Length: 146
Image 1 (tube, rainbow, N blue to C red):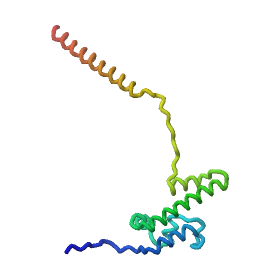
Image 2 (cartoon, rainbow, N blue to C red):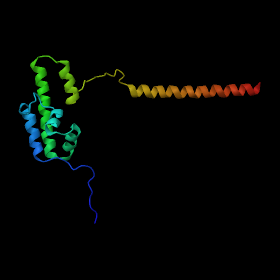
Image 3 (cartoon, one colour):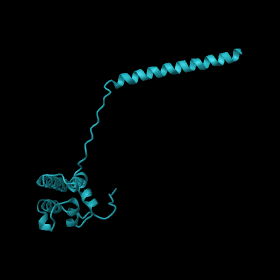
Protein backbone atom coordinates (compact mmCIF):
# COMPACT_ATOMS: atom_id res chain seq x y z
CA UNK A 1 0.00 0.00 0.00
CA UNK A 2 2.83 2.41 0.76
CA UNK A 3 4.49 3.66 -2.40
CA UNK A 4 7.80 5.50 -2.35
CA UNK A 5 7.46 8.91 -3.86
CA UNK A 6 10.57 10.44 -5.36
CA UNK A 7 10.74 14.19 -4.99
CA UNK A 8 12.52 16.46 -7.43
CA UNK A 9 13.66 15.84 -10.95
CA UNK A 10 14.62 12.32 -11.93
CA UNK A 11 18.35 11.76 -12.24
CA UNK A 12 19.87 12.04 -15.69
CA UNK A 13 22.60 9.58 -14.70
CA UNK A 14 23.16 6.64 -17.02
CA UNK A 15 25.72 3.86 -16.42
CA UNK A 16 27.59 4.73 -19.63
CA UNK A 17 28.54 8.10 -18.08
CA UNK A 18 31.10 6.32 -15.88
CA UNK A 19 32.90 5.11 -19.02
CA UNK A 20 32.66 8.60 -20.54
CA UNK A 21 34.14 10.10 -17.36
CA UNK A 22 37.03 7.66 -17.42
CA UNK A 23 37.65 8.37 -21.12
CA UNK A 24 37.67 12.10 -20.37
CA UNK A 25 40.22 11.70 -17.57
CA UNK A 26 42.48 9.48 -19.66
CA UNK A 27 42.20 11.49 -22.92
CA UNK A 28 41.05 15.04 -22.20
CA UNK A 29 42.40 16.16 -25.59
CA UNK A 30 39.60 14.18 -27.30
CA UNK A 31 37.19 16.57 -25.58
CA UNK A 32 39.14 19.72 -26.40
CA UNK A 33 40.77 20.05 -22.97
CA UNK A 34 44.48 20.24 -22.24
CA UNK A 35 44.21 18.70 -18.78
CA UNK A 36 41.40 16.88 -16.98
CA UNK A 37 39.59 18.48 -14.05
CA UNK A 38 36.38 17.80 -12.15
CA UNK A 39 35.01 21.09 -13.52
CA UNK A 40 35.95 19.94 -17.02
CA UNK A 41 34.15 16.65 -16.44
CA UNK A 42 31.01 18.50 -15.40
CA UNK A 43 31.18 20.53 -18.65
CA UNK A 44 31.62 17.39 -20.75
CA UNK A 45 28.69 15.68 -19.02
CA UNK A 46 26.62 18.90 -19.24
CA UNK A 47 25.87 18.94 -15.51
CA UNK A 48 26.77 21.07 -12.51
CA UNK A 49 29.86 20.16 -10.44
CA UNK A 50 27.53 19.45 -7.51
CA UNK A 51 25.78 16.83 -9.66
CA UNK A 52 29.11 15.12 -10.28
CA UNK A 53 29.60 14.91 -6.50
CA UNK A 54 26.05 13.60 -5.95
CA UNK A 55 26.51 10.93 -8.64
CA UNK A 56 29.82 10.01 -7.08
CA UNK A 57 28.10 9.33 -3.76
CA UNK A 58 25.22 7.38 -5.35
CA UNK A 59 26.79 5.30 -8.13
CA UNK A 60 29.85 3.14 -7.31
CA UNK A 61 30.93 2.75 -10.96
CA UNK A 62 30.91 6.51 -11.42
CA UNK A 63 32.72 6.97 -8.08
CA UNK A 64 35.47 4.61 -9.23
CA UNK A 65 35.89 6.55 -12.48
CA UNK A 66 36.12 9.87 -10.63
CA UNK A 67 38.60 8.46 -8.08
CA UNK A 68 40.82 7.26 -10.90
CA UNK A 69 40.42 10.67 -12.51
CA UNK A 70 41.54 12.38 -9.32
CA UNK A 71 44.63 10.17 -9.30
CA UNK A 72 45.33 11.21 -12.89
CA UNK A 73 44.87 14.88 -11.94
CA UNK A 74 47.20 14.52 -8.95
CA UNK A 75 49.84 12.77 -11.06
CA UNK A 76 49.63 15.51 -13.71
CA UNK A 77 50.09 18.24 -11.08
CA UNK A 78 53.07 16.54 -9.43
CA UNK A 79 54.57 15.76 -12.83
CA UNK A 80 54.21 19.42 -13.87
CA UNK A 81 55.94 20.56 -10.67
CA UNK A 82 58.82 18.14 -11.13
CA UNK A 83 59.14 18.78 -14.86
CA UNK A 84 60.11 22.40 -14.30
CA UNK A 85 62.31 21.38 -11.39
CA UNK A 86 60.63 23.99 -9.22
CA UNK A 87 57.49 24.32 -7.17
CA UNK A 88 55.57 26.98 -9.04
CA UNK A 89 53.16 28.80 -6.72
CA UNK A 90 50.20 28.28 -9.06
CA UNK A 91 50.76 24.53 -9.14
CA UNK A 92 51.07 24.38 -5.36
CA UNK A 93 47.85 26.41 -5.03
CA UNK A 94 46.11 23.99 -7.43
CA UNK A 95 47.38 20.98 -5.48
CA UNK A 96 46.07 22.46 -2.21
CA UNK A 97 42.65 23.25 -3.61
CA UNK A 98 42.10 20.38 -6.01
CA UNK A 99 43.68 17.38 -4.33
CA UNK A 100 43.80 18.34 -0.67
CA UNK A 101 47.47 19.06 -0.16
CA UNK A 102 48.25 21.19 2.90
CA UNK A 103 51.20 22.89 4.49
CA UNK A 104 52.54 20.87 7.37
CA UNK A 105 53.22 22.87 10.50
CA UNK A 106 55.27 21.21 13.19
CA UNK A 107 55.37 22.48 16.74
CA UNK A 108 57.72 21.33 19.43
CA UNK A 109 56.76 21.14 23.10
CA UNK A 110 59.71 21.83 25.37
CA UNK A 111 57.68 21.18 28.52
CA UNK A 112 58.05 17.43 28.78
CA UNK A 113 56.71 17.31 32.33
CA UNK A 114 53.56 19.34 31.67
CA UNK A 115 51.43 17.00 33.78
CA UNK A 116 53.70 17.44 36.79
CA UNK A 117 53.79 21.20 36.30
CA UNK A 118 50.01 21.35 36.12
CA UNK A 119 49.65 19.30 39.31
CA UNK A 120 52.14 21.54 41.13
CA UNK A 121 50.36 24.67 39.92
CA UNK A 122 47.02 23.32 41.17
CA UNK A 123 48.55 22.55 44.59
CA UNK A 124 50.00 26.08 44.84
CA UNK A 125 46.64 27.55 43.83
CA UNK A 126 44.77 25.53 46.44
CA UNK A 127 47.26 26.69 49.12
CA UNK A 128 46.72 30.29 48.06
CA UNK A 129 42.96 29.86 48.37
CA UNK A 130 43.37 28.42 51.88
CA UNK A 131 45.70 31.23 52.94
CA UNK A 132 43.44 33.86 51.39
CA UNK A 133 40.32 32.47 53.02
CA UNK A 134 42.23 32.21 56.36
CA UNK A 135 43.30 35.88 56.17
CA UNK A 136 39.80 36.96 55.31
CA UNK A 137 38.51 34.98 58.29
CA UNK A 138 41.15 36.50 60.58
CA UNK A 139 40.26 40.06 59.52
CA UNK A 140 36.60 39.53 60.20
CA UNK A 141 37.44 38.20 63.69
CA UNK A 142 39.68 41.20 64.35
CA UNK A 143 36.99 43.58 63.23
CA UNK A 144 34.47 41.94 65.61
CA UNK A 145 36.92 42.23 68.52
CA UNK A 146 37.45 45.91 67.94
